[in-house]
Length: 414
Ligand code: UD1
Image (cartoon, rainbow, N blue to C red; front, side):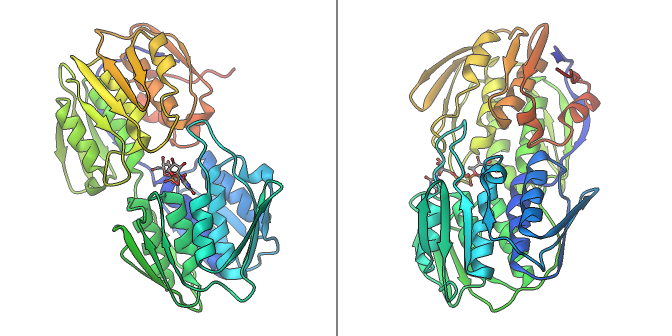
């Protein structure tokens, strides 16, 4: 439940990156011994991948923000549907299992609300490394009897998940693997740093060509994950939308350049410091143009959040989604709150209105849910966001963090 809130003020600390930690946890399967990961956000998605690793035989425990994984004894190389269908990122264990044990069988991750999300590029990578793929009865079985052998793979789209899966697969392969048109996201760089600390030889992560020279063995290490750039962006937009003044701590400003650029364009004052960023919202938000792109373009995960703020902008905005096919699902919810938005294919035209009105709305996915929370902060009256479990998948204590900034928000059990 959210009530119209005063301008947000104060300091908020960003947690470790969900999208960086998931592949890193999958990478712990590459080694015998105990890996220790710090800065881990205690989120539903992290619990799901931990549960999957335990099923495979690993010993996993999370204490505070430190996750310990002992993957010495892996007895199961098959990940069943009930563990994979909860979260698409579960498919990331394929690369590690295939690399270390030369085979794996994983339930096919289903489509999800924001689009069909195929895995063809992951499989293209495994095939280039010599694996035989059998994709039937809802399972993908991959086999490389004598181990994987380095190869060249061109990704038709710079898929984040495919790049990560291939990076892990190539780490223990024989010879050199080259990924062309690789994803360049900061989470890819974090995974590459993690692998290199383990003894892997990954070069070029963060560019569109990554070269991995396979090694015989990796060692378990202790590592701290990067801060969550999407969580940071969320609080930055919340500050802008409520015309507030918020210091966001634990931020790598290099990771959020497109966010800083767009917030500045809509009239915010953004001050960058070493480890933090201050956002001062404008009196009136200006309309703008947003087009989501793979990194370093504008992140698709912040599209719905910016759209929420643009609903009350002065003038027209256009928001174009190019990464996922179905990421305007919160538009009908925003319309219920009085927004003026028209969708035309991949583009939403947002005509700013004076104010939104509190309504009962439904979170359709993680980021859309967070966007509705921000809309609720701006809206007159009371907003009830249902299916908030989507938001809990990706935000550590969003209610507590926003409350600390002065938001009128609380949880209601249903
Ligand atoms: C990751 C992020 C997600 C983010 C997305 C894009 C995690 C856990 N999730 O998801 O938050 O929104 O990157 O930045 O890190 N595609 C194919 N074939 C494939 C794989 C992907 O066609 O084999 C397509 C997808 O359908 C989608 C696009 O590529 O349209 C981007 O997907 P991808 O980059 O793979 O996203 P994820 O890794 O699933």
